[in-house]
Every structure is written in C-alpha cells, then in structure tokens.
Amino acid sequence: MKINKLWILCLLILCSCSTKNEEDIVSRGFERAELQLSAQLKVVPEPNEYPRTIKGGKLKTTKKNDWTEGFYPGCLWYVYEHNHNENWKESAIKWTEALEPLKKLTNHHDIGFLMYCSFGNAYRLTGNETYKDILVESARSLCTRFNQKTGCIESWNYRKAWNGIDEWFYPVIIDNMMNLELLYFATKVTGDSVYANIANAHAETTAKNQFRADYSNYHVVNYDEETGKVLHKATCQGFSDNSAWARGQAWAIYGYTMAYRETKRKDFLDMAIHTADFWLNHPNLPEDGVPYWDFNAGQEGFVPDWNYDPQMFKEVPRDASAAAIAASAFLELTDYVDDGEKYEQAAEHILKSLSSPLYLAESGTNCNFILMHSVGSIPHGSEIDVPLVYADYYYLEALLRYSKKQK
Ligand code: GLY
Image (tube, rainbow, N blue to C red):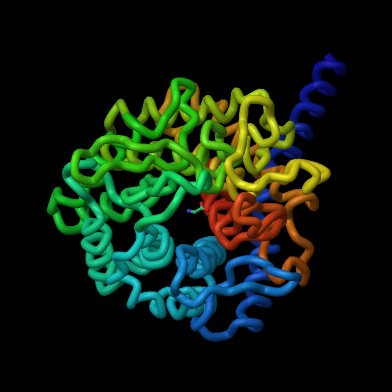
C-alpha cells in the first residue's frame, strides 16, 4: 500500500515537472523575445529599415525591397498576442502600416509573406477593416503572376540556373506555397472564389511537378509559359538539383497543411502527411530535430553546380529557420490526422532544442534576434550560420500554437 502511494506521488511529481517544462519553453521563448525585440526597437526605432540578419558582425536591415519585411511586425504581433500589452500592439501597428505601399508589389511572388505575416496578423488581432482591404488588394497583385497555361504563380522573374546554361523564364519555387494563404483569405472575406481557385490550381500544379517519389521536393521548377510544359527541375538555394533543401521541405509541409485547413481537400492533406513523414523519417535528421541546411549536403550522389568547397565548414551548418517552420506546421497538422501525436511530439522536441542555449540567444547578444544558427543561402555564400528574422517569426508562431495546445 505504502509503495503504491509512493509510486503515485512520484508519478504526480513527474507529471507536474513535464507540464512545467512545457510552460517553461513558452515563457522562456517569449521572455527572451520581449527582451530582444524591445532592444531592437531602440536600435531601429522607425520603420524605414527592417531587421533581417547579421552581416559582418552587424545588424543587417532591408528597406522594404526584399521578401522578409513582413516578419518583423509579425514577431511584434506574436509578442502582443502572448502578453496583450498595448505598447507592443502600438509598435506592431506602426511597423505593419509602414508596409502598406507593398500591396501593389507585382515583381515577385513574396507579397504573401510580406503582407500576410504583417497585415494578416494585424487584421486577425484587431479586426481593423482597413487591413482587410489592404490584404485583398495584395491578393489581387499576387494574382497578376498567375498564368492559366502553367497553372501556377510565377515566383521570380527571369534568372539563370547555377549551371550557367539553363535560363528560367517562368521559375516557380516551393516557397510559393506559403503565399497562397493570402489568396484563401481574400476569398473568405470577399466571397469571390477567383483567389482560392488560383491558390488551388497552384497547389495542384506544384504537387504534380515539384515533388519526387519520396515526397522531397525540387526547389525550382521552370515552366514554358506558352505551353505550360515543365522545362527544368533544379535548385537555387539547396545543395544540388536532386537534394532536399531543408527550408524547402519545411515550406512544403507548412504550405500543404495550410491548404488543407483552407479547403479540407484530401489530396492536400495527403501531401502534408507525406512531406511531414519524409522529414521525420529522414536518416540524416539530427537527434535534436534541427536539420542540416540541406538533408543531402555533402552526400554521395549529390553534385552541386555551384562552387562548393567541402573544406568550407568543419560541420555541416544547421538551419534553425527550417526547424521553426516545420515545428509550426507539425503543430497544425497534428489536429488534422488520427495519429497526430507523433507530429506534436516532433514539434515539442524541436521547440525544446530551439529554446535551449544552443539556439536561443542570450539577451543583448545576436544583434537582438531571438534564435541563432540559420542559413539563408549557402550557394550564394550569404547568411551562413546567422540569425534570420523569419526563424524568429516561425519560432514565436510555433510557441503560440504549442501553448494553445497545452490549455
Ligand atoms: N523564400 C526564400 C527562402 O526561403 O530563402
């Protein structure tokens, strides 16, 4: 009898420790976010330049001319969502509203990231109708890049492949799945199906052309815009054309999970499950759940077209941004499947790693970014083992999703 009581007591202590651990990740992450972001707001007080990363030991910002400016106000919105403090809301509004001119952007596809991470969160958390109109206009801008023949949205304008030969006149990158959320939103608030129809066409075309048999994906697919024919399957930011670039895999899991949420289409759910399982079952996924920047970096059978020097790194760099995106996606996917527990556990494992001193920056360091150890693009020789604003954004989003599940 006495032993039984002792066992129950031990179990209760264990359970309360694990609940405390879970709360700890969320409070630790957000405490650090508040410290880092309030320091950042002092360093860059006005929304003329947006924090992006570290270059040469110094903060690197962008001037509303890139793809990442929406993430910084997005981080401010997530902190506000966590602490409900009006000062954070004021800052989030200021950094969001300064992006309004981007609603007319049509020269690349990233208007979804730019506007939905900023104004999308702003509308969700304030209900301000002006933000809704700005988002709908942004969706209209994105639709200008859709072509009926290809059945998808053109990501970038013309560029050349790493082999220096192939020319991409209609390149579509896997990241583009993320921009579809803006289109689904526009249909919901206007009742006009044109936006969701384009989003569905894009997700279908991408599922057909951008994946391999194992559900890893090609970073870039280049189309013939006259015939819709696939011309090239390649990489721009990954190790090699046939490799699995970590962030590209994360974009796919997140993109198809979101597309399922918005449509309830089984084919999109199947894509989300297959792409998530590719990630989780990969033999080269490190024990802490934070992937190498490319699952196949340096492996036999994967030959880069860019100037790769294997001596460049002692260890293959990790990409915390890919981990954060995947964690956030896993937490959503868990709600849509019967065996969702494995995705929740995977997300929890990633978040524990990211919230440890190995990845979570000490306050006052890391140029006031929250996470360390992400990779922008190794083939371009840029943003290697640095913080990235989008790693912070998806980390905070994942923490919020995780904390909602604990309630
Ligand atoms: N969308 C660009 C990237 O993931 O680096």
